[in-house]
Image (cartoon, rainbow, N blue to C red; front, side, top):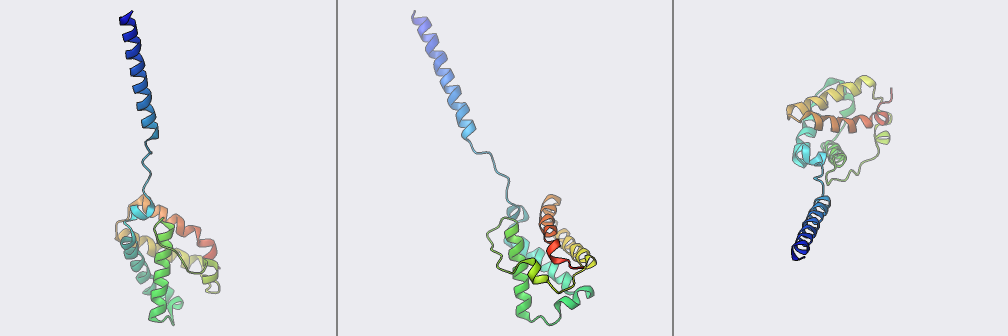
Length: 153
């Protein structure tokens, strides 16, 4: 009788341990995918891309008309708005405080060709800093989501 009791107790202990082990595993949080902000390298890495992108736009004759008359302060504010918008869209700690895209681009007459040229500049900036394809596509998906509010013609 002692052997049976001992065997039953042993199996009960094993099943309790297995059950506790299984519930511990199920309670262990699944490793979450890192935010795009983190995968891009954080604020400084995004700032490098934004600075390169803006330099490309500002030095392209096609975009001269959009930057004419900007004071140094206006250029800095534009840079900060783009940086904050990319940072926030990527899940970073930034807060975009600028106007909505439709309002800030209304009347500029941005065409599909302008959009395509600007997109090529952004891709070139991302490529320059060797942003991995998945992260580049995630950031570009955000940018493309803004197109309807930016392109007028």
